[in-house]
Length: 265
Image (cartoon, rainbow, N blue to C red; front, top):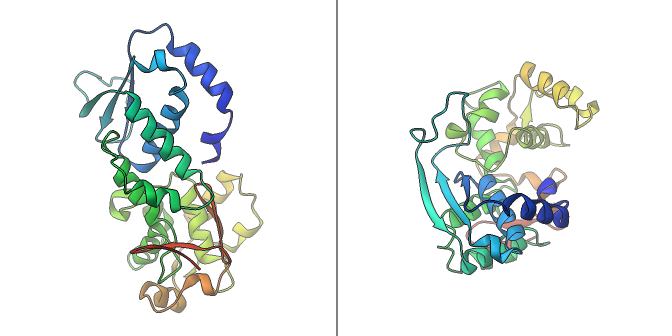
């Protein structure tokens, strides 16, 4: 969430100046959680411009925004016009962005009890985001658990990172899955074996070097990983947890878990 949360005042001024000359402004967004987070962030910013807000409209895409040079916007992929935005849409967006940035996930749980129909895909996006919180049984989120399942079929990292439709989780971009896999493989009691140990010494920002290590690694489940996958072990009881979920800092001492209910233990 870091890049989206920076430069708020400057972003508002720039957005206002950019949008002002136009009679109509239409945003195209996908249904995945990352797009929906960007949408509520943008609406939270632009809600400060009530005059401009009357010009806004949104279309929902059925796939990611990837266009070739000859793409025909009139005849291209399916997109559904959602309509113009009013006070209700901007208020829901404001609450959603505020809730996701809160220091605990509790506000996002409360948000699920509200009528979110003004933003069509916000509820499923929130549910996918919440699924990435640690499980009460395993201490791992949905994508981490899918990595363990997929390592029964694949040894290399490309399918784990890039076959999103097979993985079935859509919260993370291209960079974060590597960090999640490293957490599974490089802790005191790893659930995954075979990931290059040299990753410990490569700067997190050196994505090219890290990618080369991912490509040549051949990973598999450890016996502990198999036990976690079978819900017989809790990964967090044997390994350090230190990551962010929105504005929530997840650590072993402050581990919010999401299953049938939200718990902290």
